[in-house]
Amino acid sequence: MTLIDKALLEMEKLKSKSKFEKMLLFTSIFTELLEEYNIKPIIVGGLSVEIYTRNDYTTVDIDLVLSGRDKANEILQKLGFEKLGKDWYHEDLEIALEIPDNVLDGSYEKVLILNLPNNKKVYVIGIEDILADRLRACVHWKSTADCEWGYRLLFIHYQDIDIEYLIEKSKKEQTYSELNKWLKTYEEMNKK
Image (cartoon, rainbow, N blue to C red):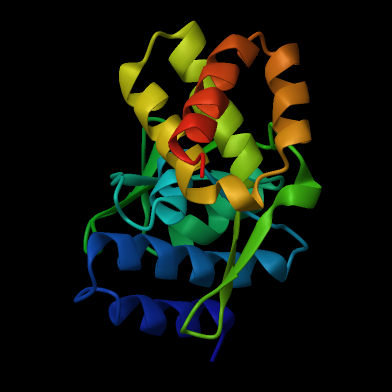
């Protein structure tokens, strides 16, 4: 049995899962296939926010950053995905996947390895870098939703965040003023 055949059997079992479980478990299957070619897909965007907010935030697609787009496209096609514009879509599983970039906008050292119950893993953008992404959308695009979710991420994960890294990045990206407000609000709310 080939790895693709094995993956297709595993994907069959995903049909009864929730949307979040389906996306996460599929990504772990896809990750395993890509790692055979030394390609490491990293979850970014909405699914990373959903992971870090423990499902409070919801998204409808999977965004992955990876090198080796041609190999990824070939594997997706073998797994029954259809290319629709910039997205890949699997009709039976109702999963949409996009590969927005081949380079991570952040630190590869901060990427989280999340081990899943199916004995597989996924890679997730570091909390600091997804926070920086939400800060950029909040400040530069005036996205109130990203302001809210960014602050929630900061509040949930404050103890685990490399604040110095985040501050330095926010200064470079001209989002420090907003980050500073979030930090002050957090500190005010957590005074003893």
